[in-house]
Image (tube, rainbow, N blue to C red):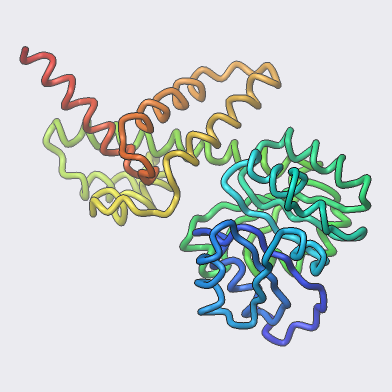
Length: 309
């Protein structure tokens, strides 16, 4: 991390949530000028407690007027579109020609393409650059960043992205980063779901979950979920990885929509989405995505109860 940074560009950061807060903190820690905005002002206050050099914007218009680089990391593309070009207070109301927008949300690539075309008329450039790695890697600056858009533009902001991410992948034209992120989360969701079912099968047979994971993680069945998520979040029953089941369902929906748009036959992906939707309905509002393991257990328990009637 370059504490002696000489980049004079001001970075406007919109979305000081679970991911955005540590990412903005690292940018400030690197010596960059950061101005922040969130719909919840308390989040900006939290950021400034650890990063007092960060300025607080009182509106999106003010943030846009003072920034040469703008980062958005928000729950979905509907919110992004409202923030960027919505009626009333928006970035568009104050954005300056020559500004670069880094759209780092896990969003809809079609919406991002539309925004990029609209902003190009204002001489504003856009890259989509969603991230993977969760809160833990956001804190350490070791995220994977998937970038869609101009490679030339990427090189102009690579130093900024490198503060937040260890692996920066250019994957194609605008929207490609978000398409890649949705596909990545589809693979992750499938791996987590099948591992949850496997542990249920093993437990009901009499196998011990901890030992099952030890075997899986030294065998061909290992995946990111078995290696990284099950012991700290599922076996501990904490279910607090920091990524909600609602967001996972949203990303799965984006991936399946891409499959439909490309006329790709993807029956496993479609079935995976429906099971995650089912779990989302059954779990508490705001449940962590790792809590789907509880839903898998509940499905077996419900089946047992129906048999005993």
